[in-house]
Image (cartoon, rainbow, N blue to C red):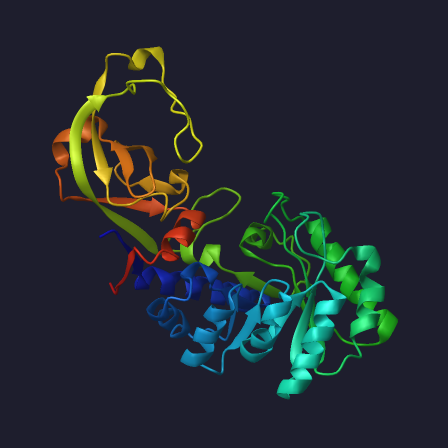
Length: 359
């Protein structure tokens, strides 16, 4: 069975690095835990680090966090769907919001549950995912700040999530100006400007994040120790906390060029090859993992650089052993490093065992 290892020492190293960084910068931060997909033993490891605030995009994950430690502040980091309002208020101390009608439903539910639910207004700054348009922000805030059962405690933004728009000093200054505009217009304090995510860290290193951005939400850099601009490990961090191990179930020498009429495979892909591939054979290994578990093989990186992932079907991946044909046999495990989206899909698969390495 394929399995993932979480290396506890690297997770602690990455967490301590980030915690020290934000304390030195005088900024608060929260851990984004969605990559763990609600895995109880992995969440326990995270909580044991001393995390005070955890953000997630799945209510079931926030429920698990509250069951493990009810004192941790939980944040639902996407605008809630109407049918989830009751559970959002029950398990999340705060939520990201962009719709007036949704906030009215939250207000009603918070009153019903006898709670004060915190609202973070998300603002559109160009990536074109969630966010209130800047020109509508004042009217939007005026419509919600007097509603019972809720309190607007922050404004925020997301960048580089859909359109690939990178954060910039100008965009973050703009976010801070929106906060100042609300405070000046209504005489009410907005405690948090949460504009920082993993992709903003390189700007923080360059001292290009305005002091007004006083809250970060970090997931990818915590679990991978990486700079999202360069894809390199940040100096002082331990790199990725995850390793994937998948077992070889067949090895055979086969032609490089398929035999027969070629069409698309079930994934909608067409096999490509060059004239130099005709008449050439190579040793191919089949692995006990498929695109059911990791949608795109580009997210898997063999640690042995002699190996090449050729493709895969729903239940198996095909690996060209290249010059390493004599070093592998059926039953051996092949080790992979993971990119963020690969780890996310694999951790969400019930068919992948999850282990912890403590040294």
